[in-house]
Image (cartoon, rainbow over all chains, first blue to last red):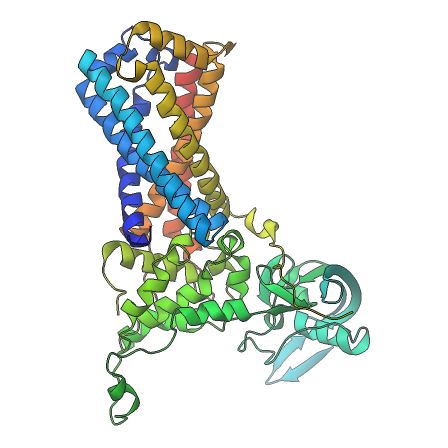
Length: 118
Length: 254
Length: 155
């Protein structure tokens, strides 16, 4: 990713980090008071209730995109620290971008579909 | 034993220490350990002890040193697991009877305690650690005026100007170990030192080097560099200030 | 035999890094970041499958999650619960330490100004703002562990 300054990538790494503290906090807070109850389909804290909660779903959408950027940029930084070379650097960039787009598409399809049905 | 000078009593203690020296043999390409017992006083340093070993026990022991007073930065080595200047470390103050001495880590060995500093100096050079002016004619030909600097402007970079390029921080940095191309704490501190100098106009030229995968962004702030620096240069602070400049888009305060 | 320059660097002193909290946090941040990135990929795939890739139903959800959760281990907790619990701990430490770095490097909070040397010299990682930061990181993680333990094993 030679065309983007590393500081721009890192600025977004830091911004998404700040966003993640909020939305990942919400994601984890919705496990309260029982993890087991929160992953049941039905029930007062179950998945169906979570899907109906528009505020929570908005947080999940933001979480998907922010976490994917943060994770992929972090993974890229780590992979380029472990090894460097002309082919390696290009391969890392390609893998990171493909993987990031893949996660975003899969996650968006599942979440949008779930919202439309419910 | 005591000596009297201006009414001040200086107590001189003597003790025998065991020095375990890790030595690199360029003929075989292997490391081996040598042990020496040597008597030193509480006024003597590890470098004094190594030189005593060299002159009385083992002339083949290779040590690099020059000034013996913490100015030149030649004698940095890993003493009892921490990179320090051998000329500023006293055996009596280390608190152990057996003192291990190893060559600086993260650098290639040449012989025994002597390491190859080439890549370290190459990285130092890559950040353009000199005064850069937009107008070179004014800088090198019209020598009739001074570049004015106030006391406050001096303080902005003075701390980082004390660097003696001994390589202790470079040797201690875990990220230099992980990323072989990482510029390291010393080069980045030098980049900040010149960029925070009000007489310098080269911050933009240095950006290409420091704002990269191997520049400041390879630092993840363990602060080991600042903790081992024998001159109190605090490279971790310089790197954090550079990161802040890059993130906020404001050049270093000067 | 001829003498030639070494091609490998001198090995590092791990003992230097394993005795300071800063160094532990750095190593932890790297390792947990890598684990969490891989977990994100797996988590997105599993939940998307459980939501039927856009065609959610109670049946698919319960089948996929039942498979992932595995057998019961302690109390109400399954194998999957314990894995999620451990991942949540990584999130807590990575997040708490990450916030420390962001506040310091982006907003300059607790970042000292360069000053004239006075002996003894205290490096910035040992100055009080950093100590406060690091104790806060530990406090936040302990509170999180208590809450997460309740949610995973008691609730």
